[in-house]
Image (cartoon, rainbow, N blue to C red):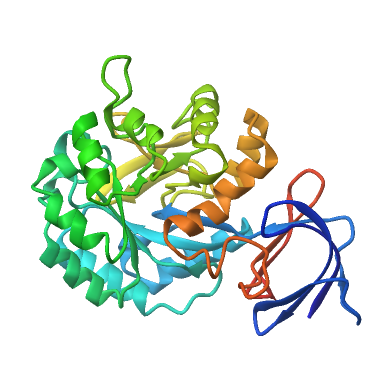
Length: 371
């Protein structure tokens, strides 16, 4: 198939005009190509969005360990231009996590592709558990991780830990050889965070949320990860988890290469106000609410999606190129899948989102097939 007359953002995220040929789901060539094809004049073509931290949406949750729930998630995400994602588990028992990773590993998608599995916990700090279930918070175990990794067929791409909550040096050094280790749900001070980075941490989970803040006398996790160019940082860009002014400051420091937009959404995303379940806990989405909350008002998860966050970032003053990279190639790099997805480049999967002049979605293609 040939997409003709495309205005698109190339592998360097520069605007270009030309044709794109797709064969067997892969981008075969880019340029001025002879032959008939589908005329895409008047649209803006960008790479498919990638969400590496998402619990659920459309009524489904990754922690259900259910193909029906995964069907709901993948179908809903495709509608919003998310072509690849990492289903994300909560802090749960080893038995539950085993069921979750086995189910995801064996799943045949109906929509958005699974790029890997994200374990948010269970090796986190009780004092920073947020909406995670404290009954299942525990010390990190290389043996437990290895079991889950094996049961996932090596599909675990990201895990969040609190390095100060257990003797984590050996864990970080071992696990970082297999997947990206992220600091989050953590009460670490600046030095503990620096130590974890030296040992192999390369990612920060939902920056600013559930971690020690930056002050003028103690950098905390926030200041330490912002200051270290080896660390990529997730940002929930719904306008509620982080205010626009703080987002602008964070992007000014992180630049084009280190910011990763994530939804961190839960099953209620896309369903409006109501009562839902998250990690075995009751959560609520209020009318016109920006996120889900526990009964005591604690922020539980978002109800957004990456397309909405992309538009939010631009409306908040982040430039188009930086916002686009945060929603595509940067998350792909964070999970080491950027050789396959994240940009429009020959040899990569043909994951395309066609937008109109208002940046609203007109068509979504996953592996070259209309979603």
